[in-house]
Image 1 (cartoon, one colour):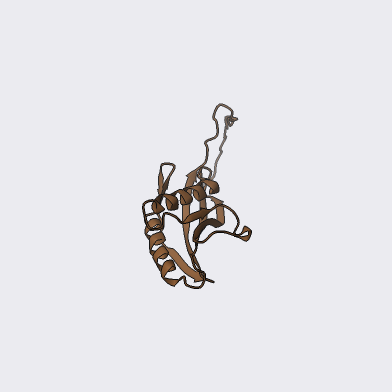
Image 2 (cartoon, one colour):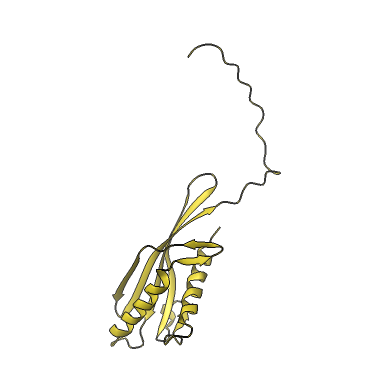
Length: 152
């Protein structure tokens, strides 16, 4: 089953790989909480919310909201840099996420800037098959005999 930590790790890997060989290669990807302070420019990947629901006896559905924050070099002069990074991030994520032998499409990407911080967010919808019950350890149902007499 695809876990939240696996989703987070894959998004970080996607961003890191996309940054290589570009003018943005020096941008750091933060792994710590922003309340501890951080260098600019930098990127932070966060799973904002996640829901797990059982579809049936064999499958579960996980819906996760992923946010990628970009902290511009200059907190007062950020607009052009944010627009360039917005294009860059949108082009990465619109291609979807590939990992653990599957492809997860991303149908919509939302972007907004709040207090000079660019937030790019999208939802991932993943359906996973549950591990099958080990038949050797499972208790089999006994034979059921039905004696039906009469009526409808």
